[in-house]
Image 1: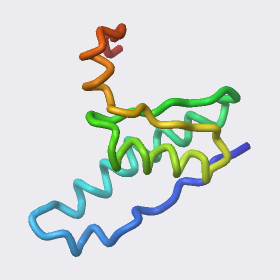
Image 2: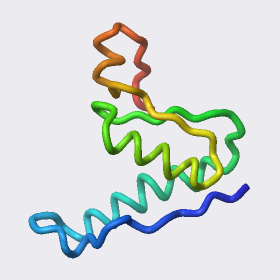
Image 3: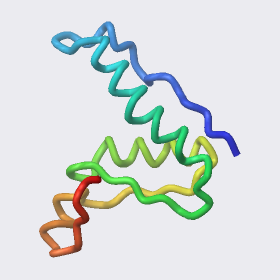
Length: 91
């Protein structure tokens, strides 16, 4: 399995007040880099964002589109922390 990196689902240049270069870089470094590393994962992946809305949901959908079994964390990392769930430090 070799996941496909999809382009941004919108025209970054048309977003007023945001840097097109920053958006493209963020997309490539975060989403693109993650997709490249996920080709070796065979188990289900759970993605999360802060509140469990558009970012987590769309990330999971894109991963599924790329052939990776993925779900998103309802309520995001904020609800996870409020519930007293474990958090590992960033490495």
